[in-house]
Image 1 (cartoon, one colour):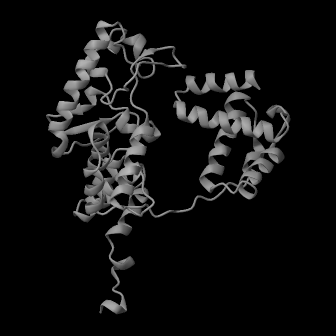
Image 2 (cartoon, one colour):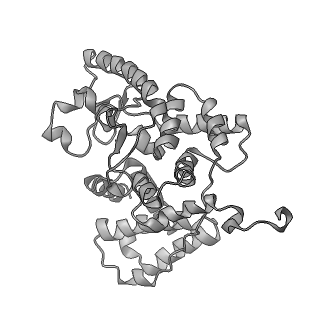
Image 3 (tube, rainbow, N blue to C red):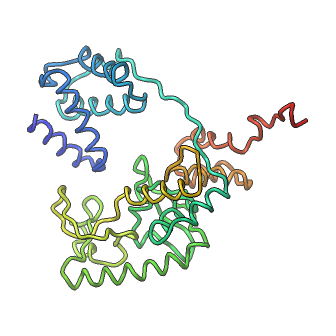
Length: 317
């Protein structure tokens, strides 16, 4: 199993999969092999894959999205790692994704939560709501991605590997500039200690060998600690982990009494919904969010329709 998983990791990194996707795929591939008593995947096929997915749905009662996640891991294993022709994949029944209505905070709730955050957590959460960023998009921002002149943010390799532009809110321009001044001091201190090189995306470290120590390439939200990257053996200051901000946002929501099933991602949902409420065109919102299909953005229109479909309750007539 060890040799097989090493090959999975190698091929995923060669194809520039994220570290979180790598961990997820490795988890499901291990689970699949252990479920079938450590039988090598090359000796298994449609029946075993179907049995495993059924086990997840029936016995483990996982969601449809989790079951599909496991299926994608197995597809990668067979197609990319084992290079096996899979004509039987067409016969495997995939779980149908449920169409969930996104949780959205009111403007008052957003303001109350933000008012109960401070420091880096406050600044990051403001970008999630004010710019519609996903949490990891915010944490992976580099200094060069912030354009104060045009008041815009460039999101590099967002979901689906696409770049996009989004807005930089006026309200956080000055706090963000002050934050970057502090980050620059940390970067200069790291450089003097011989640790001022940041991990570069893809193969840019070879194309621009000196760029990793330049200020513009540094993370906007650097980690508090120097770390070692197991993938590249790079030693330096990575960006903050998502767990700290997630925890702070959760505590702030509990403190102000938000009873909705909300998280950091709820700020992005609220960003889209509030823009539509303010009269912005749905195509503009689609572009800011980076959605490939307009149908994905359409789900936010539910929140701007009073009483379901602008129907008044008989109690209110």
